Length: 267
Image (cartoon, rainbow, N blue to C red; front, side, top):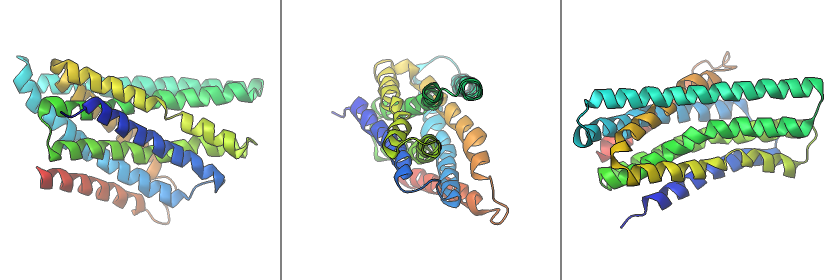
């Protein structure tokens, strides 16, 4: 008997660990290599886009036909749009938090409040990512445990983990530049990813014990991942590419190709 919730917990601990690794760069650098971060973000976006179809939307459509009388296209589309909408709302909340951060910095210079707001904004952003990983592993119970399904869930966790690396660095490195110790900068940076195991367990529990939610949950996770990849990762990895305009683009292509290869080969 496979413990799918435990799998989700382990996977999301892995994504948190990558966030901690990103935060740990504060011990070695004042700023990470931009070319390395660009190709990592590009690869992660390619993996996430491919995984959104083969590991999330396709199983959602197949499962919807089995567990619901509603048309599969309606369920998949509704879940997908709601996932993207949820992520959009989260992004708006992050933007609001960032404006508060800037106001605090300009008006009073209260560094503690600024740190709290920064960590909260990144943490909010990580909730749907943890849910996506948890849903992918929880879905294995209802879709049937297989090597293909497991690799799909693992690939989603890897894609999210890869893009967590620069997020951890994005918190710890600016704090270090503001004069905080390496230890404090690291602790604040890794803390932003600690919500993912909690969200992952919640996502897994939902789809394990409420089977009819599975197609909605899978398509929800796909919508959230596509919005993150298209709105955040791809534009970010394309910055400062004048000298090597296709460098990060090839990362996207390679990430998509690897994920597609794994899914088709194992399928």
